[in-house]
Length: 148
Image (cartoon, rainbow, N blue to C red; front, side):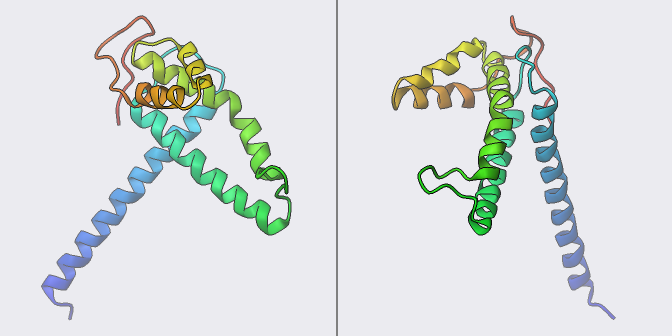
C-alpha cells in the first residue's frame, strides 16, 4: 500500500507536469498563430504572443542547425545550413508581421523595426520597444489583444 504522503507528492508532481504541458501548448499555439497570420501587418500582438514566437523560433532554428550539422548540409562560409536557411526564409515575413503587430500594441508604427539598421543602439531600442507593456484598451491600431 502506498503511503499517503508519497501519494500526495505524486499528485502534486502530476499537477505541475500538467501545468507545464498546458503552458507549452499555449506557447506553441502562439508560434503557430504567427504563421497563420503570416502577412497580417494590422492589429496588435501582446507580449506573450511575440516572445513565445521568438522562443520557439530560436528552438526550431537550433534544432535545424543540429540537423544541418549532422546531415552535412551546414555551410562552411555561412553558418546557416540548408534546412536552417529554408526555415529562416519561410519565417522572414511572419517575423516582420508579428513584430509590427507587437509594436502596434505599444502604440508605435511597424516601421520602427527599421531602427535596427542603426548599429548596436538600434537593436537595444527595438528590444526595449518590443518588451514594453502594451497600451491599455484600444489604440489607433485596434483593440487590446486577449491575454492567456
